[in-house]
Amino acid sequence: MGDSTTARVRYGRVAPAPMRALSAIGDYLAGCGLEASLLDLVELRASTLNGCAYCLQMHSRAALARGERVERLFQLAAWPESPVFSERERAALAWTEAVTEVRDGHVPDEVYARARAHFSEKELVDLTWAVAAINAWNRLSIAFRYPPEIPGASAPPG
Image: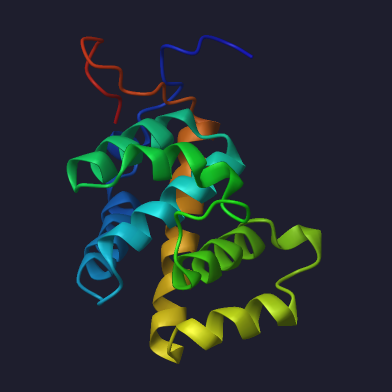
């Protein structure tokens, strides 16, 4: 699989303009009205599905710093069976999975209906931007093999 401690390319230095644009989406999402805890769950679930260790490390630390409960992070991979998530969060997680794994049958009507029952049109568009953005970050980090930031390790790539 290659060296997992060194990034292939520091994409933010090579092409800073698209990185700023993607970061601007994150800035928009931070103020769009969706709960920060919900956005944390979305980022973590998509990053788990994509296998992005860098994003999992970064976003789990950020979620914990915002007060997320450890047991919810532990149970995120089994969210359909876990009692620690609200129905709104479950709808967002189902939407996140469907949009992330779009090749597996696109986004089913029942997943859309479930999401619409808990999110306004604008909220659902914002939620979809959140899923699209974390998927883009995951693909960049995976393609260029960004190692997770481990406390006490070398400086982060980028």
